Image (cartoon, rainbow, N blue to C red; front, top):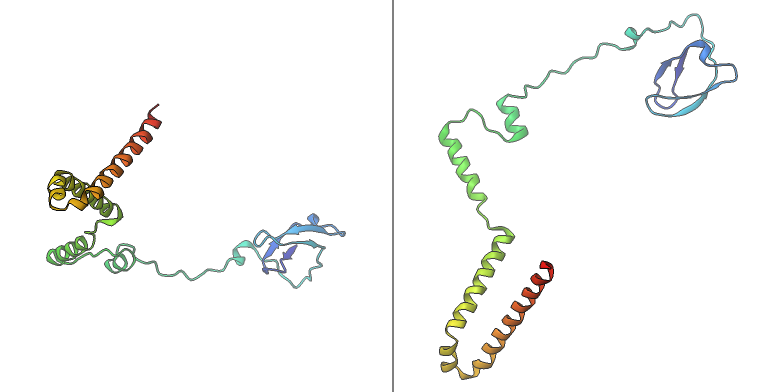
Length: 162
C-alpha cells in the first residue's frame, strides 16, 4: 500500500497488513508529521512503483576543479602561476600591513615611558628643587605616591605567596 504525507507529499510503501480498518498512527520519516492512516483502496489501474522507478536519473552538475588557479584565487585568495617578482611584491606589501603594535604593545611602551620619566625625575630632583623651590612639595608627593603604590603591589604579591 502507498501512503502519502499530506505535508511534504512524500510517498511511502507500507505492507497491506500493517494498517488495520480502525487505522494506525503513522509518522513521516522526512518531515516528522504524525497522522492517523486508514486503509486505502487502490484501483487496479494504478501501478505500484518500484524503487528503481521512484528515483529518476538526476542531471549531475559538472564538478568544479578544486585545484584550478581560478578557483583557488576566488575561494582562498591563493595566487598560482605568477612570476616570482610579482609574488615578492605582494608578500612585501602584505608584511607592511601587519606592522602594528596592537593594544599590548602600546601599553608596554607607555609603561617604559613612565618608568623612564620617573627615573629621570628621581636623578634630577635636587637640581629641579634648586631651580624651582616651589616644586619640592609636588615632587615629594609624587615619590610618596609611588612608594605607596609599590607597597600595595608588594603586599598583593605576598598575599598570594602564602
